[in-house]
Length: 405
Image 1 (cartoon, rainbow, N blue to C red):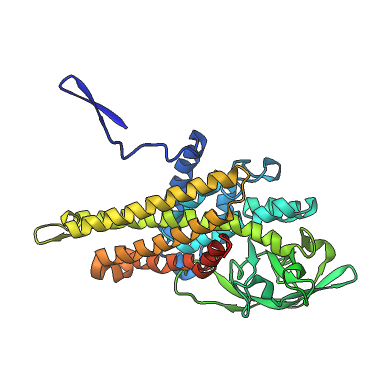
Image 2: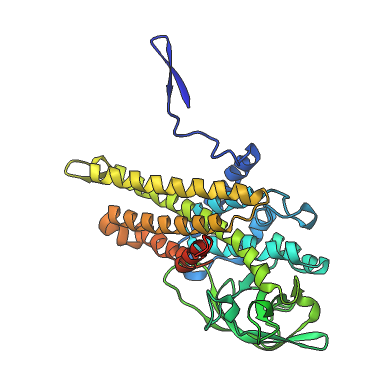
């Protein structure tokens, strides 16, 4: 709140620019927010249009590693910052200022989907081999679950890793893999018991390229996929043909991969929720600028009740999504495993982001459909949020089943 003095009396007025975002954030979190947002706006945002044609460069991730932005929640002994889970939320929100959903996605895969499972499940040798250079941005990783014939049904995957002496022989394919075209290593979800379902799944962390940057024998990028949005992010279809890996490439326990990856998905979904509400806020800000400048019938269009109410609706939904995400993150960070609420937050936030994108295009009218104003890119980019990390339909089913239905 803000206090002002009028005719000798103190009057309390609302403060819409309070510096503290939420009770879960300390001054350290806010200091990170200030420095990381400044870096994103200075070094990433200017290249947002260029990278739509060329992909974000690996050097940008190395730069993030130098600044400590890739290992915010990981131990200092491996090069991380040793922060709490809330640092991931700050990171995700700061990346929204890049103006490039694909860049945000590529970085999120590295920092929030690939590195945490290696820290939690990896042997010391695996941590030194993948976690340390991953935090530095010297090696780019990817996570491979989805296959051409299996997505939401993780237990239905067919990529097999069959034990042969001291090695596993991997055969199969993965698709829609973010960072897959450029990745140096991969967390691979495979069947070590092809006849089983959930109990037959195992995680592996393996090199895709040797120290010279050449693909390992038997591995190939069978297709570089073109997408509706996220153009700055490389997405690949990966093929494995008799790829041999040592037995110690197993990440975690043999046969427990489904449960390992289920845990990973909870953190991924919370980060996706944070990215969604942040994307909505950026779109609202950009559209608000337009509404204050664009005139119709002799006044700015934002002065018309129809437009003013659109902003009120969008801002209310975005704020509700943000506060829901923060409250759920507090429970997650304090040792709870609130799968229902995480799922709700991801579902609600991603839907809100898509609603906001559609409304912002409408407010800009013809300009909203033009690339110049960039809302059309945000509209295309944000649509993936209702598919990746669990589709709306899967989220609804998880929520429904949590009530015993």
